[in-house]
Image 1 (tube, protein in one colour):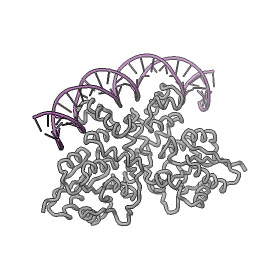
Image 2: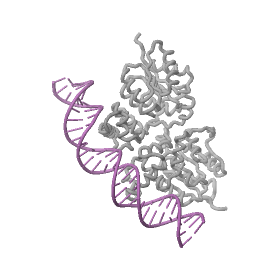
Image 3: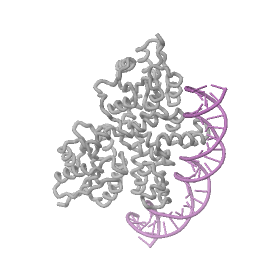
Image 4: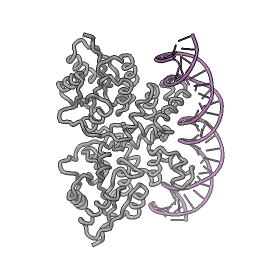
Length: 224
Length: 224
DNA sequence: TTCTCCATTAGCCAAAAGTCGAAGACCGGG
DNA sequence: CCCGGTCTTCGACTTTTGGCTAATGGAGAA
């Protein structure tokens, strides 16, 4: 058989380890590729566009909320994606599915559930924890519009937008990406057009529509 | 007995009506003062600093999230406040209490519960819907810090900050508040200092920590 | 190959954002 | 009554943003 390739994107080494184990349990001889930040995620999905599954944490360095999910899905529509998150709010799960995830695995899940979820999604099913309904519609028009606009961005544009949402100056972004400020301005102008806004504050607000207001952030970090 | 004064802050007339009725049922001869926006809320709590209870909606024109709660509480620490919201997420309720609310009444509550909640808080108790626990800690350090900083703002500064979070230009804020742009800039500089940031994007991000990511926003608007 | 899209950069210019210092109003204490 | 503090207001000045034009090179599609 052809060797399966799985991508694990999570900034926490221990979780990557656990997820990797669940994946290798599910499929023997699988290749696991790891990412721990937005840039490494972008590189990874680009280098392995033939991957069979992406396990994606909301909230990595460089992105938070559903932005990364919406964007990755638009770049690789055929790459099945399971969101793995410390959050276990059913509405968050439904929003994740709405933004293109094939499954949602809370980090609090027993190991067996993680394996079952992975297996289900590899089989082409949608998976959420038992007892969570999926049919509710919890994405308002603004959120959907923001997701659609973000899906339209290029990799560079997405990266720059995420840095905008950290409150960085053009100069700082240029320095971190090692390009000139003129380049950043060009990207930002393109981003504004696609998002339908005309200044960075409005761009940030648009992205915030995809935010997860994570009431489980603390517990997640502590238990993680 | 001295006449009781109650403040009802909600942008929806029908809800104000219902809440008013619940209040007059609870205390006969009570004076009800209404507010339907941030400016009217600020005016009202200022004109009636001796009020006995504030019923406060999250999400009015001009504010959303816990910002208004945190700020009003800091200005009037002795004014008991019940948050009234379309949201019924237990974590949101706990966050409201954490930010100084004495109670939380979902708009979906039966009328009797609303009356009971009001009576309980007037008695000095804390009230949340049956079955909701209160002891969990769901406010992270960042959110608490943002709330503390916001609590430190003057009325004008708070108002300007909320307009910043709507993506308005200084010019637009100046026009709406009928002062010069220089004045707005001065306010904004003061806000930055108190929030510990140095540009408007970061200020907006700080405020977003107090946002309620309202999965019930749509339903709320429709049913409201 | 030609055409299009992307990334990169420069330069220019107008607008917006932010900083500083300062003046007047107000308020509470001494 | 005077003093110190805070709030609001504002103009002057500097920096950052953002829009526009234009040029280069590369990747990919028709």
